[in-house]
Length: 294
Image 1 (spheres, rainbow, N blue to C red):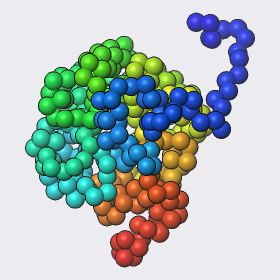
Image 2: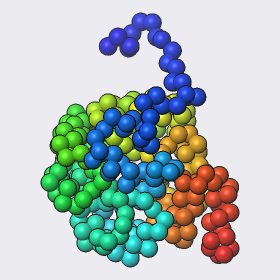
Image 3: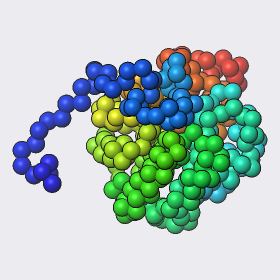
């Protein structure tokens, strides 16, 4: 590879310049897509703020019953007022989410080994496009392992899903998977997000890191930041604020919502950051006021 040896040319991400191909449509990099794609993306990303609050509850596809998600039928519906997008599996959505919920659906379509297996990188596509359309999904989510043992099959899963989804104008959400041997550095996330975007994904879900502004600038489609492990509420809100300030177009807080003692209030605090421009300190005060000092 030419870039691996010889003279290295410094990269310039132009982080102070807006994305060039934006024009009239509010979702980054999607100006040239067809009407159906744009309609789905407008269901995901608020046309006014350009951002989204996702709520992931798809952990059960490899973890089984997760702490805080033992009763999906009770936990998820109470969060409807605070979130824009529900990210789950077809089994969980069909069985636990009322169809009149009024929420956008990000459908998990990849699956693999359970948490009992040390290697989770060998996934398959478990849901075909026809069933995704029957679910009226606004996007389909594929776990993508870059730099892991299962990288080739993972990219094949992603590309096959994108090919099928494009036939029906359904966006694909590429989820950056971080294996146990990979560091969560800007170097890795620049690599992973760019590869997934160049394969044709319309949305990338990844993690916040140092130099996050450069990761965002180098990725030609919107990035949604995953919350990751459970953090104290103050730290989670700081993560949310720094992500949005760094150019993320949304937050997908799973554990930092459903494992919070006051999950609905936490979801609303995150919403204030994502859609109303609150700082982390303002959101924390809102959260404390909402729970009445409890």
